Structures are given as structure tokens and as C-alpha cells.
Amino acid sequence: MQKILKFVEKSSLVKDFKVHDFKTGKEFAYIKLEILFKDSSKAHIREFVSSTQRKYSFHWIVDTRIEIRWDNSPHHKSITTYPHHVHVNQDVYPSECSDPVKILQWIESLLTSKEELTKEIILHEIRKLR
Image (cartoon, rainbow, N blue to C red):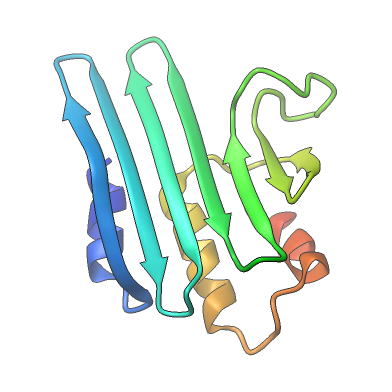
């Protein structure tokens, strides 16, 4: 969880962020964080980790046309990476990555590219994310 906060604090593409909740205990950690990027896209990160389980949801709202959410809710059993998956708008795809820092780095790489972020480009790039 500290890695997430350090990344966000150092990122040159983050305009602002809010920690809505952060708790740690002897055997667990929880964070709920909202990030506003300089391009006006937003990310919402929620992660709970304990010695016996991990639950997460990483939601990136690119604009009014594109929303992406990685999570491990135990549905979509037909997905090959079950329970890990990614939603791109209403469609669901396998997800090889559940590391929030890697996902934030991936978002930054897309934001610094010169390409317009379309659903097709994002889907192509998600397949590379591991």
C-alpha cells in the first residue's frame, strides 16, 4: 500500500489525490484512494490485503466514453484468469495483472503517448499488461 502512495506522490501526471480511507492492523491493510490525472481522467483504487485474502478494484475513468476496472470479484467464472478480470465499459476480459503500481504505470504510459485513447487501443495495450 505504501508503494501506491509513493508512486502517486512522485508522479508528474497526477494533478491531485485523496486518501478516503487507510487502515492497517497486525494482519491486514486497506486503502481507498482517488486520483485525478492532469488530463482530467480519474482513478479509484480500493484494496484490502490480509494473511488469508486479497480483494481489489482499480477503476480508471478515461472520459465519458471509456471506463476500465480491474477486480477480483468472484464472478465471470468463464474468464481464464478467474477471479481476476478487467471490465472495459460493459465488456469483460481476462486480466494478467493485479498490481496497482503496474496498472498506474501503465496508465501513465498511455497518458504520455501521443495516441488518442480509443477502446481498441486500450484493449490492445491491456493484453500487454502483466
